[in-house]
Length: 111
Ligand SMILES: [Zn+2]
Ligand SMILES: [Zn+2]
Ligand SMILES: [Zn+2]
Image (cartoon, rainbow, N blue to C red; front, side):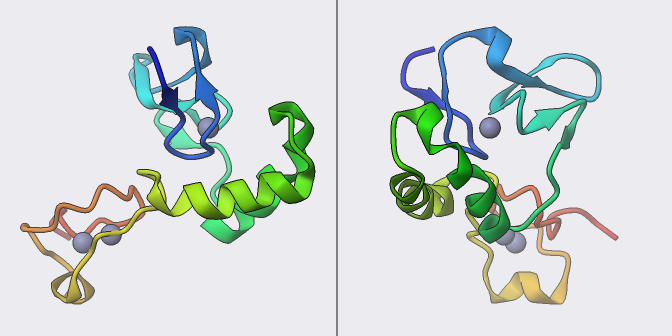
């Protein structure tokens, strides 16, 4: 598990114990346990809100809270949870060609 970071909060993940869980109890390899549990995100917030929340924990990452916020602003938009590659086609709803991995976007699901 080298250079793995949580795809929601960017926390470095060095052991399996730090990973979140899927609905069926299996391990979710994308997100840490502080973000994702039982198949759901623990904090259902926008990216901006999550940056505010995470920037309170700068000391845990060896940074000031201001540095932590800067770090989050740079990194978060590229993480799987927040990155959106939707196209204009998606705005009308169902788009089977969409490759976006943002869990908030459900344009590849019918209904
Ligand atoms: Zn996380
Ligand atoms: Zn999207
Ligand atoms: Zn889409």
